[in-house]
Image 1 (cartoon, rainbow, N blue to C red):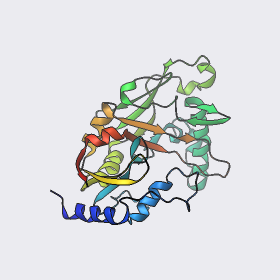
Image 2 (cartoon, one colour; image 1 turned 90 degrees about the vertical axis):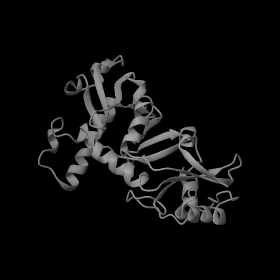
Image 3 (cartoon, rainbow, N blue to C red; image 1 turned 120 degrees about the vertical axis):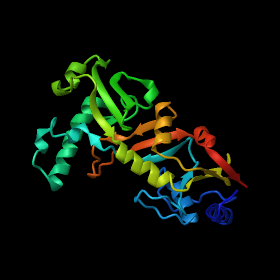
Length: 271
């Protein structure tokens, strides 16, 4: 049975989106989210960062790629912000502290990441993708702890890089060293404020890029989310890089699952 809120969303989709192909001619063509912004505009969803559902209590998802995102969530802990390992942070506040975080992040990237075309990043091969993968060749693994936090740890003995003794500072030459963590409070906030009110909906396109249907899925909480993190359905996609030449600094920590996985949570489809 379709709820009153769902019917309003369906009507809006059918009147403004159904049968159309996104017109992104006025968007920056290098921006990968331009079709999503077009859809937001048609559905009158305000682009915001307040971690609230997009429309009438439902979170909106677009289906323009092979994977769909739960969100882009910076971690609650990074080792390069830990005064125990970086005493240069002690007693520092304001802009100077942000500057030191960036400098310390560069140490992190050179230790736990790799350089591609001269730019260091913690993405791709160095960074764990799934809990079920275990340790990677950079000695890193992702786990879900008993306290419902997601932790990425580094173990020096599991690091297979030939020159690791040159790359890894002595202070990091440890076993099960926590380098990044999303604590349970943060995960609960991100998941449940977005997805646990009414649920979510996704607008689908055919092979020609034309929107042809809308799907609805039910609400879910932190426990259900962590269950699918544990079984490997959820992928962590990091895009942390050196600070750009223009001084901007984005960590990008995307949590995604395949579209076929999202389809398994669908409760209704229209038309």
